[in-house]
Amino acid sequence: MTYHPKSDFMRVMIERGFLADCTDYQGLDEALIKGVVPGYIGFDATAKSLHVGSLIQIMMLRWLQKTGHKPITLMGGGTTKVGDPSFRADERPLLTPAQIDDNIDGIKQVFAKYISYDDGDTGALMLNNAEWLDGLNYLDFLRDIGRHFSVNRMLSFESVKSRLDREQSLSFLEFNYMILQAYDFLELNRRYGCLIQFGGSDQWGNIVNGIDLTRRVLDHQIFGLTSPLLTTSDGKKMGKSADGAVWLNADMRSPYEFWQFWRNTTDADVGRFLKLYTELPVEECDRLGALAGSEINDAKIVLANEVTTLCHGAEAAAAAEATAREVFEKGGIGDDLPTVTLTSEDIGGGISIVQLIVRSGLAKTGKEAKRLIAENGARIDDAPLTDAGLMIDAGALSTPIKLSAGKKRHALVKLG
Image (cartoon, rainbow, N blue to C red; front, side, top):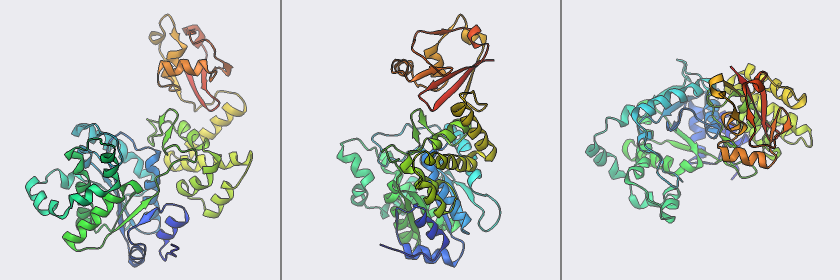
């Protein structure tokens, strides 16, 4: 279906590839023309930072604000206690309230870089669903809210069905999650006039539940808009790299490593990622994405600089690019490489090269480090590393050692 939007927000969503599905294109488009529309995304606090997999949603909220509307970032202080079962093979580990609060503090740092929490009409709101979920009376909730949900319908949602089809247990606790998320949308509409919920396409069932519940209880029309679930062109889930999740907080993934993740984008993904993760004009994204041969590398550097500037600032992006040039083009040691600083006590009579590779984050385990060496994927000071039994003493660290895994991942080890 070709739809020609009247509102700036819908035009951006369609042009830049953010839109997977919408519950009512025309109704939402009309609402966006009439005045300031509040829209929200919920983020459960399962870790101290969000990772690149959440960035598409954060960019949607950023565009919502840039086109004259009001973003709401909803922290799942309440729902994290239950855990979203959508498309998961197993139950999430339950976190304590203290762990959840700690994670929320870490996650909040990311949003302020992308959206503005000012007092204006379009100033973002930071809310926590514990505000209305923690005090719920179970019997009242069952009577007032639970009666609106059909178990038959809930069982038909793909996110639940896929779990049951595999005969994997779905606890009653998890089954309640979709009711709580629906109730969030109802409360946000009642309290803040929120009209849109955004999410990945795996959230479609949960979003539709909230729209249905709000119509039944308040007789209000609200909308859902989902983004595609992104995989890279080689089939990997977006936000994961060879060495784990690509976190958005600098203390969990250095700006240099973050920059490198984008610089290493597959050729086929460059144009699409420029549209989703930067604010460059669509024509420029298409032009850069169509470059071929070695020129596509210039487009990848533009992508890495633009995304890193948004997340970590222009200085961090420039420093990362300078370090990359130093390391790759001149074979030097850049200032910005991930660094492991050891004390004399750490080294003692000597420390194995395998341990150093693990400590520097180039491998997760000793076994992985040994395999890296055996497969000729490891280098020390740009020379092939072939001896997995090599011991490094304090004398060898009188100058920093550069360790490499493949051509693109490097770390420094030095004596503090």
